[in-house]
Length: 189
Ligand SMILES: Cc1cc2nc3c(=O)[nH]c(=O)nc-3n(C[C@H](O)[C@H](O)[C@H](O)COP(=O)(O)O)c2cc1C
Image (cartoon, rainbow, N blue to C red; front, side):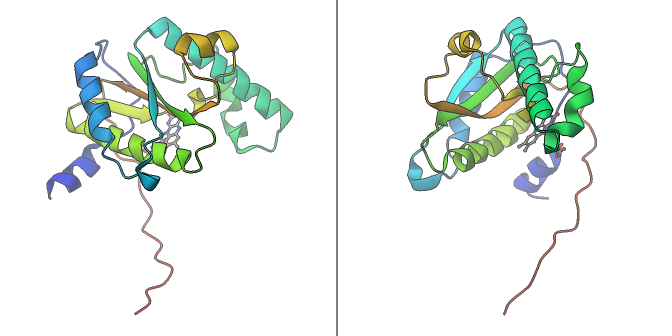
């Protein structure tokens, strides 16, 4: 296996972390390296909010849970419905008590914002894994609306959170969830 194959096999979504913080300098190194990700027109619309404060991370989890539950009530046909029961559990922290949370966000009007930030996030998760860190993209933690909380995390007006990513030292690395055989629709020669 080459380096990339090993890394691709090694990276897993981590939801169980050691009680140990991640050094700011290491995080910045990974964030910077991940900015090498491809992005439309090299516009690099990604911005980062780094939260090390566990009680704030908990508050953000509660806020996102509340908002998603409201969305489910308003639209029972939504695909989010399958998370309703777990989101109702008070102790459930969507961020799995991780020591650090990074929000990747950018200006709403950038057409490629979601794709660019997702590519950045993919690089970030691989780069973190290459350094022995674990991470997980947690979409259930993206729905932050409370103006006070938005102010506290410093999300500028007109910006949208694309990817909440938790990061820390893994306590346990799960086996890879099975992947389907690639569906090649057609080979045209
Ligand atoms: C866009 C996106 C949203 C995700 N949201 C969540 C989430 O809210 N909670 C969670 O535990 N995992 C979340 N995940 C992680 C996936 O469940 C995980 O990537 C998938 O099960 C495959 O496992 P692996 O990453 O270990 O290969 C998300 C992943 C992506 C890419």
